[in-house]
Image (cartoon, rainbow, N blue to C red):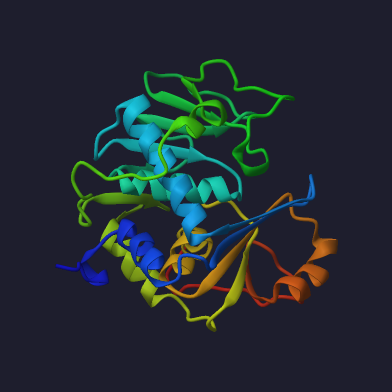
Length: 260
């Protein structure tokens, strides 16, 4: 029996996107400090989610209900980690929280405590970087471990859509709440491209950078180290229709009623 969107969590959105148009562009990523541009189709994104979920389960042994604090910039791997955590039924909590798992960049600092710490180099296509390494206190170097994991993931049991999935701005949202918010968000034209220039630390950024693109025919354009002087050309080249995290006359702001 097919689970309806109203009673399902974020894993449903990715499964539905794969059934609908797996080749469509889901995320385009820019880093204006390095001139990187990476585009991920639904299929490529799903492969990364599967590898990451397998790593979390097989290498770290985390169970549904465990907490994960993601301290990452606006980046396609931040979206991958959100979706991988939800594939396993983890509860994503704000950066800096005491958590069973903390995910940081190489330039971050591993928190104290007994939780697992995974570090990401955030280099092109997730390849291991030669110019830097994980900080002291890291449990696992993601860039050097993730590529050995399978690109298919099957949860031992389906995550409970009523269980906590995301805590943001003091609110605890279940997976079903996130799916409902994605479907209720301000509509965008089919094929639209939505710029996200802030980390996925707010519900608005999570919706714009991941869940709305999964739920609808929209592409998220994530930008790290945004150079405002490039926005007019980028808006024309990418066909950007709205933006989150930047105030520019070239692109109207996108907002979701009640999100923070």
